[in-house]
Image 1 (cartoon, rainbow, N blue to C red):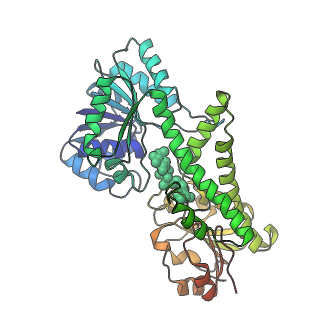
Image 2: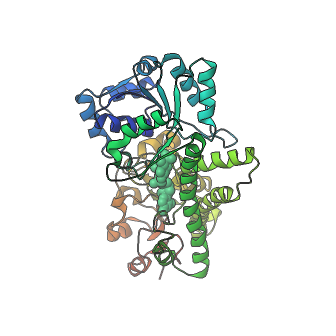
Image 3: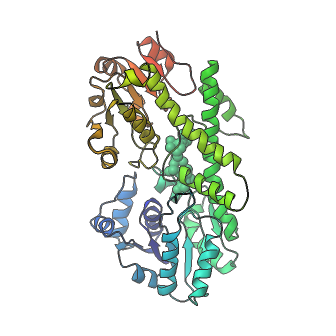
Length: 439
Ligand code: UGA
């Protein structure tokens, strides 16, 4: 099948590459020339495990190409996938300018009877809006499908090739069959394909992200109660996760959820609900708890040092800047909120992330000191904050940490370590939803 993917971010590049991997002829287009230049040179513009090899192979075998010629890419394709960004507007709602502009381009350039697939995360009603745009351009022959994406950064290739489910939002049987055919190699092991109307498909995406975010905020709120009561969130998590009705996923308490999706999408659904006179109580609480969780981490660090005045000028090491492991993405990373809070209190921060230092440098410049090694960040620091659950932070050399830090104090935002073991080693150890451990 001839496919054009518009937008080469995580979703577009991964989706396009996976379609090429299953034998389709794919052109990925983007107006960002520097991105396309890099892709044409064989460089993936962001860190995503496994993607580079797949891109190289499919480009090499002639099934995948990159171009800034958006119109010509669209004009040759049976299906055009819109994978452009839908950033938050100032009121939290999704900004649809890019989506609508691409819909117009599809209206101008697509061949007769083409299919326009909305893969960008878009509010309920967007497929309808795009249909209106096309109708106003006398392009009622183009079918609009809402086909949300559920891949996670860090495991995007795997998630795309073996998705839990595919959602196809169109009531047109022929178009639905075409999409089923395209996705059939990915769902051979029996993963379901759900066909539904546009609006349900659009809402499915937001509801999935909001429910996952809500579970995290729920656990973070329970972790606050655990801390006050001296209970252990790990015990609670394991025991409730064993209930089949609840399940173990997305129950890990943390310094807060981040990334380019959960915060933005929960905000957008909140704003959308208000627009249509539905009070989004749970959605708003999900956001509020998340914000409070990030601030609570800052408060814990400052309290340890005796408050803002005495924390001023002290040096702290930070391990992890990315919003989660296996990505260099720092968008809405909880690490940024922690860094902002500690910088505002006048602390000096030495940071290390295996892949995200460069992205943090773009935001913070010389306001941070960037270490080139895990232990390098610790020298002379009065404490270590662990903010991303990178595997290499899970079993560190605690002897080395202790001898390199100026004082043996760890604030763990991901609950990577055993409080009793750290206490025995002579650390003062703070984590999420567990009583602090110290001698
Ligand atoms: C999320 C969804 O999981 C994907 O299904 C969806 O396709 C994607 O958004 C999107 O809309 O594009 P992603 O943002 O890559 O994927 O990251 P997740 O792995 O879901 O993690 C999100 C945040 O929640 C991270 O900050 C992570 O550290 C945090 N988290 C996750 C927790 O704090 N606790 C958990 O138990 C799980």
